[in-house]
Every structure is written in structure tokens, then in C-alpha cells.
Image 1 (cartoon, rainbow, N blue to C red):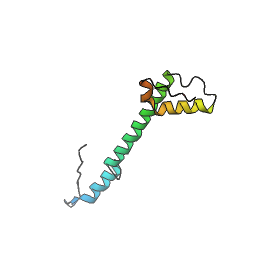
Image 2: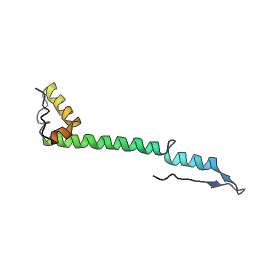
Image 3: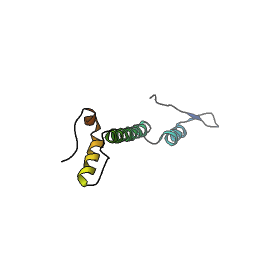
Image 4: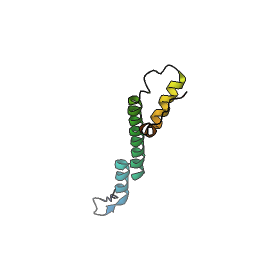
Length: 93
């Protein structure tokens, strides 16, 4: 992601770097790229959990959640969904 350089010209014709920096902070957040990275990590985490729910549902981990063991099995299946694709049985016994 390229770095954005801004400069503002005051009425007297000089550049005002403070105004440009303030505009960049208000537009892109105080950390700039760091805000984008945190957002990306949260989005990837949400996608990972959504895929885990989908895979666990296809492997019938949500059929009956009557006991604590079955609920824990479902949570473990959501978090470790790549193992489900490899054929690992994550039902607690």
C-alpha cells in the first residue's frame, strides 16, 4: 500500500504540513497502515470462524447440543475445522 503524501497551501502561498498531517490522520486514522492491519486481522478471524461453523455444521456437530460435552465438541470443531477436513473425529467421549 503506497504511502500518501499530502500538502496544503495556505492563502499566503506557503505549504502547511501540519494541516496535511491532520487531514491524513482524520482520513486514515492516527496509525494509518496499522488501522488497516487490525481491520484485516479481525476480518480474517471472522472469516475463519464462519468457515468453521459451516464445516462443523456439515459434519453434524450441531445435531444435538444437549450436554456440555456436545457443546464443547462443537466449539472445538469450529476452532479446529481444518482437522475436520482431514477426517479427524473431534467428538468428545
